Image (cartoon, rainbow, N blue to C red; front, top):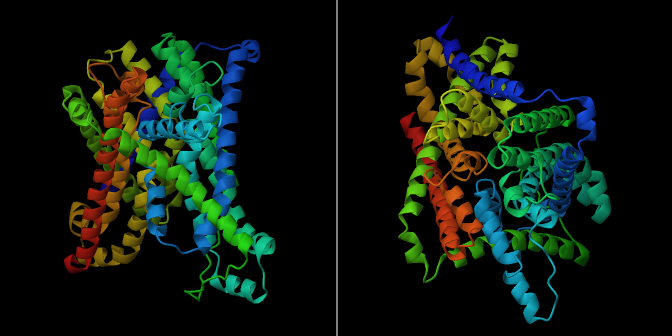
Length: 532
């Protein structure tokens, strides 16, 4: 075997081995279901129906609101637009429990909005629990994602088409129907399916804001079967049903995603004219919805965490033990995720250079297949394997690191795939001419140029692990607490002031970590030309 095949082969075998072991454990532990039993299981039907219901409604609301917001962001320039877009990006790495704490502070029964309504003499009847609270949290996380995806689609419209629309005096509904709608359709279905999958496999939001018999999903039922009922067979059966649903959704997304033709615009600076009071009102209201959804919960987290109780809460040794454990797990998972991704893409790129596209697609698919396997399914399989062999042990940190590493692979792969291909196209012939191969090529050519995307992939993978609650909820205990698990325990015990400080600390750590990595990446980008 050629040495260039080894990195990707080892990485792919590791990934598929972990997934295969988890699935085999589930298959052996799951009872053989009878078709009649499945058809007559009313609770199982309710789990599946509610999982699809809340995911469908969340995706529809997010996409429906994102269309006018994306149009407003595309055609309006205002002070703070760049900051608003950056805040929208921050929701992708914002820990779920931090956002939930902020949402509860604003929209809870004793939150800011309830106090305002009480002072105005208005009856405040919104409940942050159940389906309404789940939809609110899902829209908070997914509306910025949908907006960025649809804004990207609108920005791809050639400027010549916009100029022609202006010359034909197309405005309002006609402009949307004949110019913007065809481009938005390319992204609507893929964006809907992506958000649907994210909501379908949501765990921390359902556990915190749902959890009752009427608001339980498959993912939460798996957790309950292991943590409360200790019924591995039931958990395995539910995990397999969840896996089938997610795999079907992933295939549906791939089938419905259209092949986009890349069009180049020759006119770089064409500013569309937006006339009419009605258009201005719609754009202003749309942008205000996004601002009011994003800003108040973040302000609430900061305001609640700062006070006379802050120093007392920061003196708790358990808090800093949770911080240290979270950082160790996040850094380890981020480094492993980037390393495995680099191994996969290195070999995949070599296969493509030799026009062996089938093997290249298999290697790249081994990272993307994880999108169809929820973290709770992997954690359940690992739980069954360890429980029947060596036991869980006192500190399952390695298990949490492995699962978080696998879950971050698809995102790290997307961040590194294009830069590595571009690098190969630019420097492969030069490396062959100078006989620079293997480790020498990686050290002297690849790493200096790829430092920026590598740091960005590392930051994204680490922050995903830092804010993860799905895996740690299954393996966490009083002796093994990450910062999100510690925050959940405080919220569950109604220790509101301590929870506020913990939420603020988690938010600051993620924000500072993200800023640090971005600063290092920008410094490397500025220094890159002199190094080469």
